[in-house]
Amino acid sequence: MKATAAPIRPEAVGKPRAGSAAGRFAVKLALLLYAAGTLYPLYWLFISALKTNDEFFAHPYALPQKWVLSNLSRAWELGHMGRAMVNSVVVSVLAVALTLLLGTMAAYVLSRFRFPLSRAATGLFVLGMLIPIHSTLVPLFIVMNKVGMLDTYASLILPYTAFELPIAIFVTIAYLASIPREIEEAALIDGCGWWGIFFRMILPLCKPALATVAILAFLRFWNDFAFALVFINSQALKTLPLSLALFSDGFGTDYSLTMGAMAIAVLPTIAAYLVFQEQIMKGMTAGAVKG
Amino acid sequence: MPTPLRSRGFIAAALLPALIVFILFAIVPILWSVYYGFFQWKGMGQPKFIGFGNYSAMLQDPVFWRALKNNLILVVSAIAGQIPIALVGALLLTANGWFNRLIRSALFMPMVLSTVVIGMIWGYIYNSQFGLLNEALSLLGLESWTRAWLSDPKINMYAVSIPINWSNIGPYLIIFIAALQNISSEIHDAAAIDGASGWRKLRSVTLPMVWSTVVVTLVLCIAGSLKAFDHVIVMTGGGPAKSTELLATYMYNNTFAVYRYGYGSAVSTMIIVISLLLIALNLLVTRRKNG
Image 1 (cartoon, rainbow over the protein chains, first blue to last red):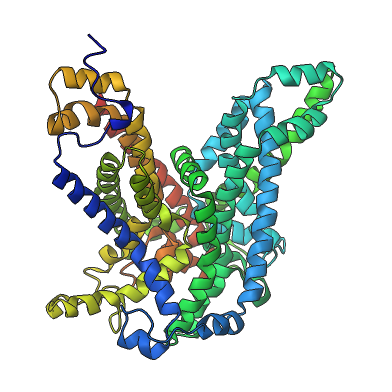
Image 2: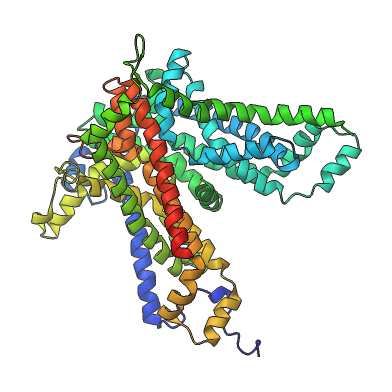
């Protein structure tokens, strides 16, 4: 009975079965238009970045008649974007490394050991995901000001790490649940200490989880604006989003120059997205559900 | 085999670094903001204890209520915009074909872009002199529809909400697709045997199956909308005349533009209280509807 009454294959689930070919085509067309609409601002950013200012005003929609790269090179120089790019890389990379190290160690302990405070520690990290990040800007500013930490790389790296740790820990704990403990028990019997097990077995085994955490953390740090805006004042330490925001003030009417600067700033994240999109989509969604 | 004592040492050494960074930079600032919220303090000199003075001043400040209302506008627009669009999109994109994957990737794309860039691009789109939107309306012969989108206090909050919604649909889409794909094929079979299809099946089978996911996304929408800050700082700075002020920009402007550190701390504390209240309220309401 079941066999004959199974015209619905799993892969057909959710398809509008009753729809006609024309209906299905209309749906696809609508989806395509919506996707194009979503990407349009980005497309517009890139064509505008490659136009002269005159063309930008005269033909805002058209492709550039004269393709110019000078916006990009001028933006790079005038906006001190090389410096900003270095700062963004330093801060993001160090914060990612710290997040991975601290997050994996904590995740390993929380997933493998039962001890009096393990539940309290887990609960604290869960709580952390409910804290609206911006509510910590003012108190962090006040305290960092007191201890002279403002205007340092550390003033960004440590808060970034703190707010990324909950997601890093829970992604890694979920992954560790799929690794059988027998391997570790065997290693223990062979006389391997916990640190040996952690660095020589757990870290390499966790690579897929670490990759996801690293990509998400990197994107978040790279794009952060609020913390950089409040904690960084010195020109030499400005990160990319901060230098961009100042661009719109400093070069107010040179729109294609500003567009050039924005194009430079988004290229790395778009490249990362094209390469890692499956991981990014899954990871950000998991992070959102838990956060 | 490591003695329990060695295990205890490992637990402490592996867990404490994460815990310390997290507590110092995510939890302790909240306590500081509660503390400084009771003081009148310009950032210099001796803070003056004024009890709940900041809070009563806040409750009497029309700008605070305006900011709260604007945040609620964002919450409502997220619930009315992001969730339905993501749900419809997910229903149409459930199957895993190449076309659907492509559309999903496109819709997710804005999530990886810097919020500063998104704010600046949309600032240009809305610009009243050369903005794309007014230009497009003129081209279509709808001159009378053109507006000063970001400076007209009647509409600018809605204008601001569109880019925020636009860039946040991706994760909800993926969450709903995952939920729809989790509905087992037996349920689809059963619905087919009972003769349910089309709207009837959507209403009586599919939507009830993903209702718990909808509840999760409602909480996410609330939390996400209260986090809004970057887009508004970049597009309007909270102006003109405080018409697009949000709780977070209200806090920022009070602290860093007019140096009312104590007051800014009180607003920070208020943001935490409000977001926890809203999340609790949402859980209460949806639970009742469910039961």
